[in-house]
Length: 126
Image 1 (cartoon, rainbow, N blue to C red):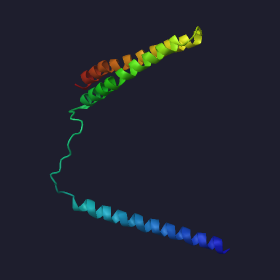
Image 2: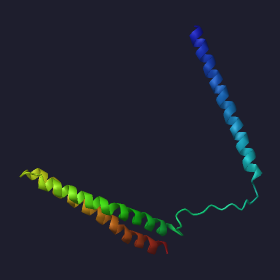
Image 3: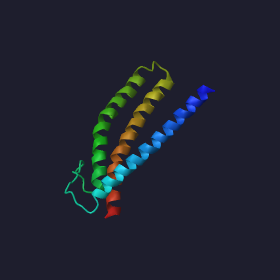
Image 4: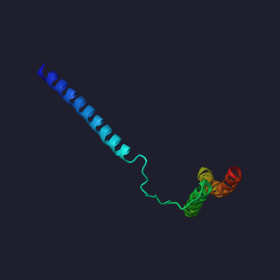
C-alpha cells in the first residue's frame, strides 16, 4: 500500500510542477511580448538565399540539383555498365544494368525539365 501511495504522491508533485512551470512560462512570455508592442527595434533579418521571389528560390534549388545530379548520373551509368559487363550471359543481369542506366537518365531528365516548369510558374505568377 505504501508503494502505491508513494507513486501517487510523485504523480501529484509532477502535475503540480508542470502546471506551475506552464503558468510561469506563460507569464514571462506575456510580459516579454507586451513590452515590445508598438515599438520598432530596427532589426532586419538578412535574406540568406538572396532571392526576390519564389521563382528565384526554385531556380537556386534546381541549380543545386543539377550540380549534384550530374556526378550521380555518371556514377549510375558506370554502375549499369558494370552490371552489363559482369552479367556473364545472364539475361536478367543485363536487363538490370539497362534499367539502371535508363532510370538514372530519366531521373536526370526530370531534373532538367524543372527549368521548363519554373518558366511556366513564372508566367503564371506574372
